[in-house]
Length: 298
Image (cartoon, rainbow, N blue to C red; front, side, top):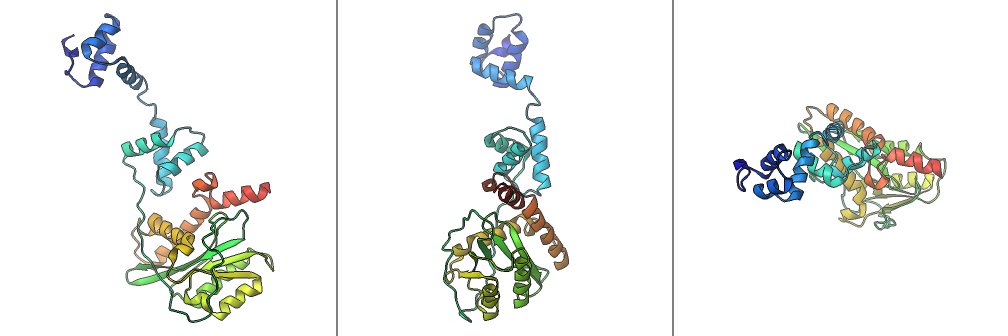
């Protein structure tokens, strides 16, 4: 009984002693002697009776975290758990991730610019930061970003659909030339009917997008061109955010020995991003899953 004196041992230890003695002595007297509130005692009793309460949840958190290569934070992991019929709130997931030492990668920034002044015709900003649309193939955005491995460079040029963030088409090239842009457009055009209406393709004022040849390709397909204002990256924030995400979740996370290795990794990542990486704003679905579900239900 002496070990129950207030100040002797931690509250958890005193609660354990009270549990052992409660069959012989009144609980009220034991708690008074131990200096423990009844609520504290029952808290530790509940813990001791459920030592593996969150063990299964922890295991699933680790699986989801590693399957997604440390790219998911607690909110996205919570949504993925819900998708797997494991009901737990985001605060608990955050606490368990902290206990497990699981930390999502922090986004870093590095900007490549293809702007070379006004070398052609600059289109008006029709998008005006209205990044939402309720239909596919109504608003597309594009840009170019640069990667560097051992003094060699790789350039990625994608088109993203603002309906679901899906990468509609992309091209990887060792050089940021006009062929990269036309190859990307050709891939995107293959997803469309011969002639389209009400589709805007937005970009910054990079030299590629000011070229008459580029603008003629869009016109021939019935696509309306839109451009950001000069030196205003927020006008094309969705493309910028995609590049930041890709670099954080792939390029800054892994060590690449060659451009070929990086190129394969980017191809794999875009497939993962389109088909498996869930988005909270898409109800916990990947871009492709969301498009199929939404268009199929229409």
